[in-house]
Amino acid sequence: MPEHVFFITLSIFFGTILLIFGMKYFSAIQQAKARSARDEAYRDIAAKAVAAQAETAATLAAVNATLADLKTRLAAVEKMLREVE
Image 1 (spheres, rainbow, N blue to C red):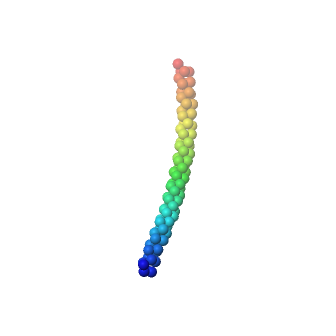
Image 2: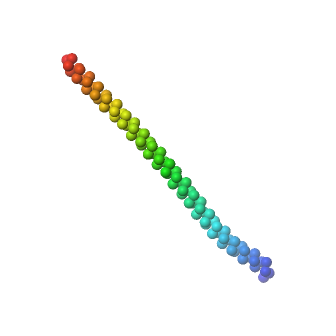
Image 3: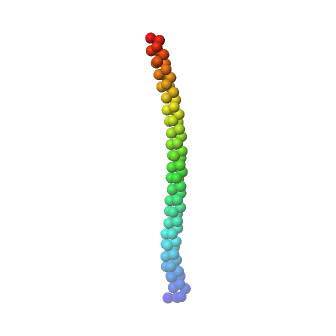
């Protein structure tokens, strides 16, 4: 077998092995990047959820304060109506 065919055959064999391992590590890097991006997206969603929850709590407190004021006024109106009867 001529020398150049032997070296080409070995080059193809070892090149294939290197290519397979290179693809494996490239895939692992891409998966790690995707996982990192996904985790960052989850953090953003969680931060938005916390902000929305705080806003909802503030709105609920305002509604409760208004409701308490309405109860007080209604009690005063009922008292006046009882006195008028």
